[in-house]
Length: 74
Image (cartoon, rainbow, N blue to C red; front, side):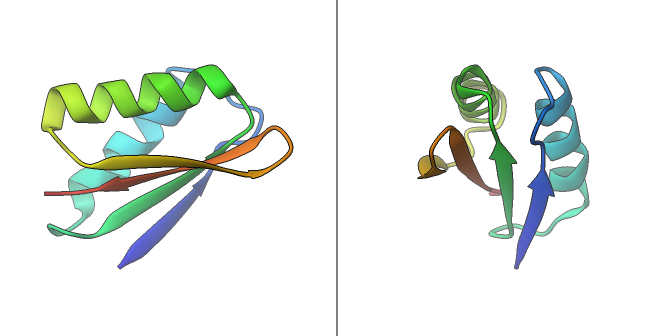
């Protein structure tokens, strides 16, 4: 199941904290899709979840200056 978090206008660590809280509630293989307008958040979020939890992460630019980060819980 996918869960979306709109983090437009939010700077780190807030997107990481919001995604981490949601992921704690989820079952394995559920995903959080985090939408952000800060390119530095993309790198920070991916680094956090891959390093701390070894969760697969992907990022894609969906519009000019807007990214979606997909984090899959394992």
